[in-house]
Image (cartoon, rainbow, N blue to C red; front, side):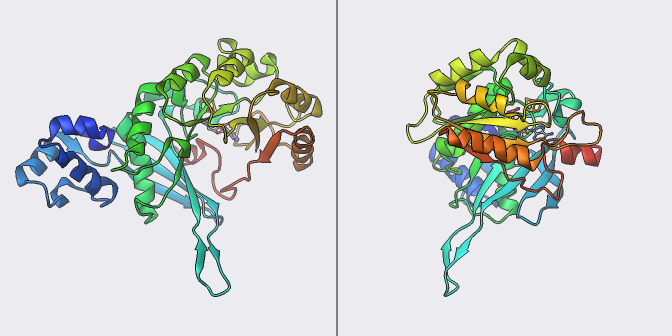
Length: 353
Ligand code: SAH
Ligand code: SF4
């Protein structure tokens, strides 16, 4: 199986292609020309195009299914070269705004949610991805390709910005080498130029890897999937919590370099009668004191066979208000794509893929 050229940083491509400006030309064809084959790279010598095609493919994955929601969210099922499948989601975060004269005043904003592994080792009790076990890590090319293919499919030109969230299938920090390589490739000015501050890594809390990511100084944001305020419940939800408990995660977050205008996002999956009470909200306020935090409450999204229940809207709103009244920023994740298989792993499972 050939490797994808999308997994190479420009400096790495420069080692292969001489003179080195050829690497920038290839980057332009791929990331702004959106070409599908090396044949189309007309300003490259024919023998260079041929040897590239012998060694590499461009896209290491293809779109095999799409579900479009009325709110602009599109969920993709993608097939990798070895036949395994993953999901990625195109999220419309803000509608375009037109003035009275019908002229476009501000463009729509999009976020792409990508996967980092086929399956996941962490095994959270609420997560459908976990049910299928772990299959393999994605390589950097397969991570970058999700962003590129979704932009292409939505006719979203290179120079229009998107945000990237590593919140699809898998635990990003359990695949840190490929993740960091992909982050850097996506940042390249000759590529998609998605700066670190537009990329967010969501983790279930591998504290030592949070430190390792911090050391890499990539300028990315982190989101912590906290979901519980005491270790007993968190270990039930996220078995790995026995090794990396809440205190160790909070300590790692305190060490993480945060842009002074930004906040660390804490995701809190709300499950009915498990963690939706105000006593938990009170503990959460205490736990996050002194951290520039923002809490995102997520409705647990049930699926056939799931052992938990969706919380009542009333408890979500009361939980949110409790935090806001104590000066903690808190949003409720609006259930984008609620009319399609919304949470991670749910489209793949429906396909039986
Ligand atoms: N492994 C990382 C990356 C994202 S997992 C992490 O855990 O942070 C994908 C996201 O889907 C997480 O935010 C998780 O909380 C959410 N999720 C998983 N199962 C869900 C469900 N049944 N309902 C709602 N959100 C779910
Ligand atoms: Fe893995 Fe995240 Fe699902 Fe937990 S919630 S099993 S860490 S993908």
